[in-house]
Structures are given as structure tokens and as C-alpha cells.
Image 1: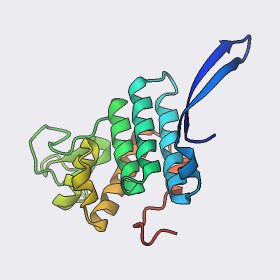
Image 2: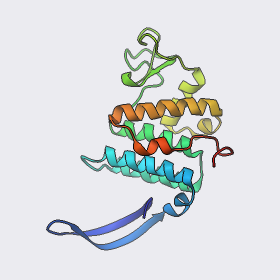
Image 3: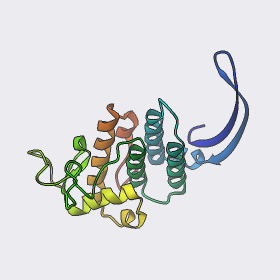
Image 4: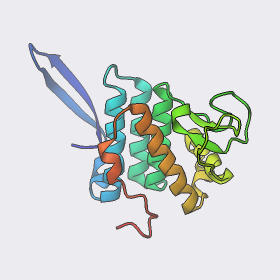
Length: 196
């Protein structure tokens, strides 16, 4: 079942492993599967986790995914913000940690108001390529708090700031994973009161 956490005991067969015992640890899928918005967010998380662990599974990636699914199923935060935080953290664990408090190119301490995903995050005015979009301070700060998991500040951010940060997180994830995330384009990023 999707988004369920289970402990499996497997017997290694000749060509396929055989499940000999299964114990359900958490039933996050029950709440998630009944809500389209939560379902698309959880699908995006699962797709990212599958891609990041193709070569080798990692305990940190597993714990990060389980924590994000738990938060999503409990409705602790806005689903899009939960996804954005998960994406930034999962990419960080995989080795693609973005920089939002110092220039990703030269290391100069902020304020860095340009975010260039190809360069690894925020860059200062001197390092920003011509035509790089300039972001407001609130959006750059929100990106840092999503990465750090400062939920009090994330939950207090304005909708326009969340939308801008979400676009950057999506672009950052797709750039570093080198393929478009199929499920990410289905995520409804409208505020809760507008979501259908």
C-alpha cells in the first residue's frame, strides 16, 4: 500500500526475494490517499527518495522520508512547505546542499539576493551572472528556514513568499537530479483555502 511503513523479513530466492513476514509500523497512507493534494505531495517525495537511493539505500534518506510522510499525514504544516523542506533536506543528504546564507560561489556572507540553482543556491551581486533574478530578502530567508526546518518561521511566511520559494526549490531539485520529476508538476501549490 502506498505511504505505509512496514518491517519486512525476506528470504533470498533464486531470482526474486520472498516476503516471509510483514509487520506494519505506520499507516500514513490512510489519511494521505484520501486527499489529492497530500497524495501528489507524497508521490513527489517517494519519487525523489527512489531516485536518490537507486545506487544505495541510506538510513538518513529513509528517516527523512518517514518523518515527512508522518508530518504530512498529521497535517502539521502546509503540504507544499512540507514538500519543499523535504526536497531541500533530501538533496542536502545526497550531497547537493544549497547555500542560502552565504554566496555559493565565493563564500561571502550575505546578503545574497540572487538564487542561481546551477551555482548551488544564493550568490552575491559580484558572482551573479547577468540577468540572474533578484529575490526579496523574505524569500531567501524562507529558503534557509525550509532547509533548517524552522517551522515557526515557515508557517508564518506570506503566500507570495512561499510560492516564490517553492518555484526555486522545484527548479533546484530538478536541476540537480538531472531529470524532470514527473509527479512534481501535479502538486497543487495553492493555499489551503483555495485548493480543491
